[in-house]
Length: 256
Length: 339
Image (cartoon, rainbow over all chains, first blue to last red; front, side, top):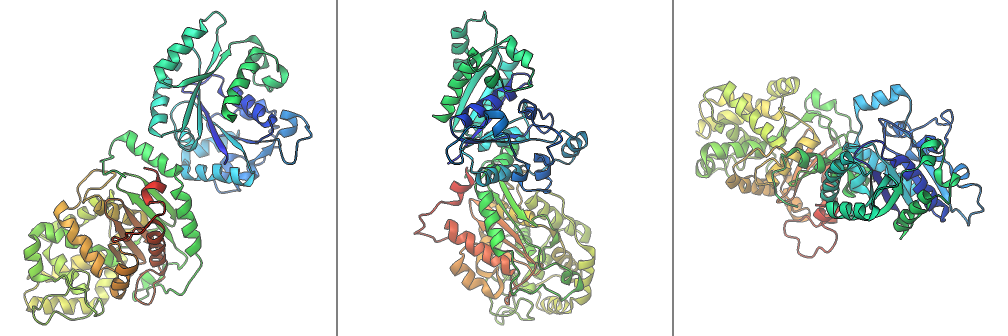
């Protein structure tokens, strides 16, 4: 059975898309078929990390939601660029990205008209079925919105990403409450952009006791990530960096 | 599933999301796909407005007492409620006069006669039940109010309480029904002769023609069914549409007399209170749990929506919905919907 993993933050700038992209790559590299859906219709961005050429993107999630295409027609195979041409066994590994439209007109249209949230759910199921996925990652728009709530409702695993910042702390408790109401089976916390001087042990204890959920990753604030500027996959550029190592623990937790 | 009032904003939002995420959505889509191909049914054509309906229109909606709702196909295509209005107007008559008074003027026996027969029970001169036209005209006559405007307002308000939205009448269907309503006028006056109806019978006939032309869609029917399932309270708005003590009257009448000449086999096979209409709608009630609304204009030989009957039969079998089911060991509706 495929596992659906949603990554979410209450606020923007927590490093969610980078974390999602790198996690997906690590899991695919471990020999799995992985899909990533960018449901951040208002501010799409994860495709940049995969260096997906905008000219190549003829169909997006928006087209599927408007009934213009089947959902798998909006899926782009990024295996070679993300993982490299590995001589995989049979059909594994594989990595697909389903982007949201970057066209201003299309973003405006979907915001104005809305769409049927049930159809988004149908899309997730179809992707898993048609692309024979082992994992489907759902990258969401920050904060509370329908796409986020739907993603949480259908996920097997929810990863909440937050910085050690009071605004993130406050917002995360809202998301945790919603996730509990929507009965998500597994919920994990990942702390990102932790300043080097911060006491990590007491931070972990504080967060775990505040939300009653496990912290599975403590990712350091670092200059290399900032320089990369979402222009590429961090784990490919800096495989031995503490960030990548720590993220690997999160990936292993998801696979377990 | 619980019978809570879900008029809290967060509950409503989460209800909508869990509906979108539920595996029941896929089940409903499969069922819709299975019965979508055209069959032997014929669209009603006794008035030109009804004949305009497309035989391909087909919508299914399910609404639960816990505030969730599911739809597939043409679930928002409007059509006239026709006979489906009858049990609901009966409920209003019961509220206005009480059981004993109403029983003096309309019986509760299923009849083997056609629904538009100009026939009254010989012994009592009462129409047999509120689901045949004669009985429905009595119920309309019983709607209280000082004049026509107040009575039609109360009737539309009653429908609005059940559906959760303002309700309107299709003017052209109303005018057509009224122009061709000779049999209905005949039975109305016959009943006036026997004092089953009041001197206001002309107004009441107008009310009756208007009631049949109220515009609904499958989702409305599901909400009306869910309201009855929820002891008379609309699960989304929390507003009471029918006094709790009369819900059982409405439901038992639906079970015994709701599906025209198919009522007996329906009670046997499907086993849930239901009402069909010549416009192609069917409402079914799963007490304590949910309402089902179906729209598909092609009718079978007995005058019920062909696809509608099949869908209800399938849902009843799949989820063990029959009122007297004792041997079901599959996944219940509550389990699949996920509350």
